[in-house]
Structure formats: structure tokens, C-alpha cells
Length: 117
Image (tube, rainbow, N blue to C red; front, side, top):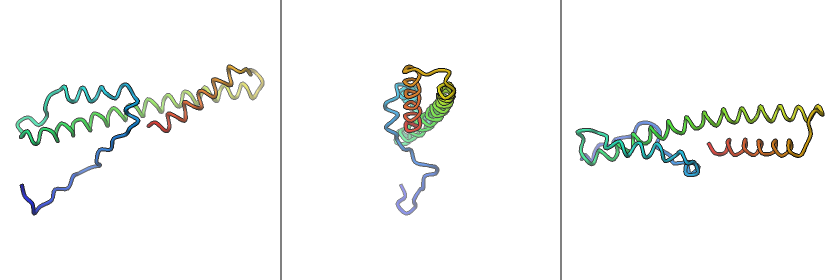
């Protein structure tokens, strides 16, 4: 080990998001990463852990990006439904407690989707 030279890490450091723990699908990339065995091949055991963590970081990033994409699509669909129902209410076509309740549910879902990811 060389004390005189410093190695600087490339890229963005991994940041854990507590919201992930609320998602049941979050364990999948972790299980897959650790069950696939040690990465690094011929590298030393001291290098195997950082290699495994790097691989896990990439899998979690892919999972998070897929989750964000899915949430954006779900949010768009919810917004369309809110707009359609609100327009019907505005035009006097539909108006009921059930419709108002559904609109409020969709608005709440929209807020949690934006905050969650």
C-alpha cells in the first residue's frame, strides 16, 4: 500500500434511499447480486468485496431507473384519469361521491409517486 499517493474514486458515490425499503421489489437486485457469487475473478479477497459492492451499485441503479420509469408512466395514466373525470364533473356529466373520492385517491397517489422516487 502506498501512503504517498491518493486514489480518487471516479463517478458519483452510492447513496442509499430509505424509500427503497418500503418497496417489496427492492430485495430482488440485492439477492441476485449476492447469490451470483464473488466478482473479481482472480483478484484478492480484499478486492472481492469492493467488486461485489460495485456490481450491486449498478444493479440497484438499474432497478431504481426502471422503477422511476414505471412510476412516471403510472403517474401519467393517473393524471389522464383525473383530467377525464374532472372534465366530466366540470361539464355536469358525472358527479358523485364515488367520482370525487377516486379523484382524491389519484391525487394522493400522484403526490406519493413524486415524493417516493
